[in-house]
Amino acid sequence: MPSVFAALDQTFRRLGGVPTYVLTDNEKTVTVEHIAGIPVRNPQLVAFADHYSVVVHTCVPADPASKGGTESSVKISKADLVPKDTNLRESYASFAELEAACEEFCQKVNTRAHRVTKRPPVEMLAEERARLHPVPVAPHTVAFGTTRVVPGNTPMVAFESGQYSVPAQLLGSTVWVRVHGRGADEQVVITHVGADGPVEVARHDRATPGNPRLLDEHFGPQPAGPLERRPRARNPAEVEFLGLGEGARLWLIEAAAAGTTKMRVKMTEALALAKLFDPVEVDWALGHAAVHGRFAEADLSSILDHHHGRGATGPAAGEHRAGEDSSLTQGTAAWARLGQPGPDQRSPDQGSQHDGDEVTR
Image 1: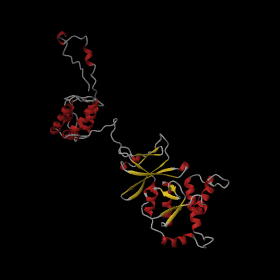
Image 2 (image 1 turned 120 degrees about the horizontal axis):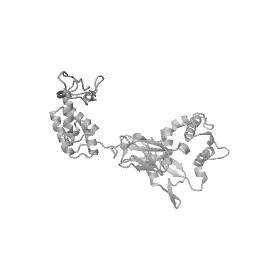
Image 3 (image 1 turned 90 degrees about the vertical axis):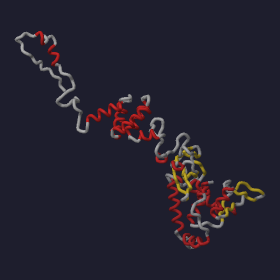
Image 4 (image 1 turned 90 degrees about the horizontal axis):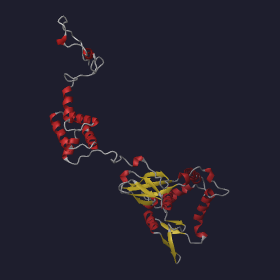
């Protein structure tokens, strides 16, 4: 049904107007049944006809004279597509190429003089357009395909044993899904009708069962999952603590993973220290503690004292640091006294001897 209605909509738009009636065969999408020779219309067809202000007539069953036009159209299509000696299907590598060839053919035959009227059809159509009804700006939604409701938690819709993604902002919305093309070039087109009219929101190649068609941009930022949880404050105390910065967030994650006890007490102590020290320094100390796994009660204040004692210009007084000219390894000169007499055992003529041992830095 979407294919039939989409074809009619495209025909009206190519003509630039809607005729008083259209004639079609008795397919089930148009005629549900016949009662006493009277066709009973499909309710969806009635809604479609009302939308375009057109009357849909069907041919009389088993009466070729009443459907000559439709049969001729089918005959031309079969001659081009159905395998025969005159089959032209092999001339087109894809359905898209066939569509392009049809466009080119229509342009060719509609701009040359007709053998009976001696006038190009495009000129006659310009005159006939004055007798046609205007084409609605928005097509009837049935022409967009079958309706599907996008789930509220996953931007995916199911259609003919396949799954297809749609933009995440359409969660909970109704969309229309239809098939375009055939064979290897067959595509699934998804349309959404919003305040600004119908918009094509997705176009996918055909999916197969178990192999959905997805576009990453349809999903947007991924929510925090079990493998990557981000802290989210739920009370004023947590808001104030996390407000210290990324160091506080890292400390919370690492301390929780380490099973640290009395975490809320330590968070309160960190906020108290933020009032005594620069909050930026406290946030740095929290990050430092997280990286080095220092979650004991006095660790944060110890890190702050050490960091604050160094000052902005370098190491604090008395702090030993290794460098190019010094080492933190103790020297071996002290071992030279091993086995030597102590100061009280030296002879009087022996002066005070300086061992010269030193500790290099």
